[in-house]
Image (cartoon, rainbow over all chains, first blue to last red; front, side):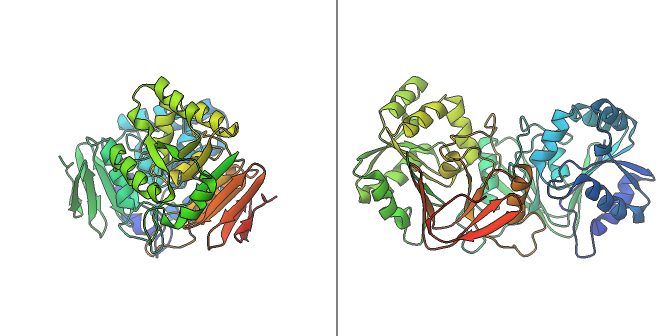
Length: 234
Length: 234
């Protein structure tokens, strides 16, 4: 199984530009991505396809968006024919709702688990690769019919991770939100993945790329971790 | 129907202190609150009961927490006997999960709609009074088995509303998150309720208290609104 799970898409250099090298390495010469745009809500899916096509052209990858196949059976066939599946960010609840409604979760998981397709996700697309979407930052604007996701990895990722206290805000900080998760699920590790970083899974090997330290949360334990080989805590 | 929906609980003056006058007015001499602590996750329910008991003692209200009644039938009877129901903040998903699992949503809604009990909520307790929890800021750390909530009001509230861009954060801003909701549900108005403010519903009359302007979101329309009488946009 070959996965590239990015925290975020935008960067000062442009959309996905910070991840060009990581995407090229993952794609390993694959020329066409089956793109899943369903996390897009305020950005319509045609526009999203164009954005990602333009972003991946410099690394030699063409993009065919799954939303153009209105019939679920055609979408399943496209997934079963894909050697590269790219899941864009946006709203994680909407993404999961669309995939569940169309019966596409199991086909995607099968195609990636078998090694037939490699997987790239960012933000919501990274949440989707986890056991559940329970550590998304997104607002539940759509009912996904359950929080279970693809479970391509055994741990949770919290994308866009940053530990800040916003002046004047009296709600929960990110760390407090993640502590809620680890209180209810102390056995499941969560990786707080900062902006600009990514996780690269190659079968049993897990590596973190990017410039920043990340943070593991597991039950009451919190540990900072530097880029490089990752091992699960606990 | 008599509701007091607070954005937040903590204030510089102490827990719920900013809302003493509004709570007294709503309670109108009622002496005992049936307290619903289920949104508490990192704070255990015994501790939460004590916190709220201490906070409401100065306004002459005693607190009996529903979590002490392990049997669902006993909890239903407590709700049916209550003349004041107080729903604390924390995690909205966990709150809704606990209430749904225990079969308490319909009894609470009945008791408040009939006018037999008045309702005070803050943060998650405010989200719960809305048609759905789709405009909560919380992390989905528990599966609530659907996003429908009490629907005591016909509009959505986003508690802890603030319009800021956090430096270095590349995820969605609050306004972008709310725009996702209004894109999918253009017919449902959302009130962005800032820290320190509250909504007071008295049958058909809706009033906003607090020091700050709030913000209505409905479809693509956004409008600031001052404290005082509220009318739904659109």
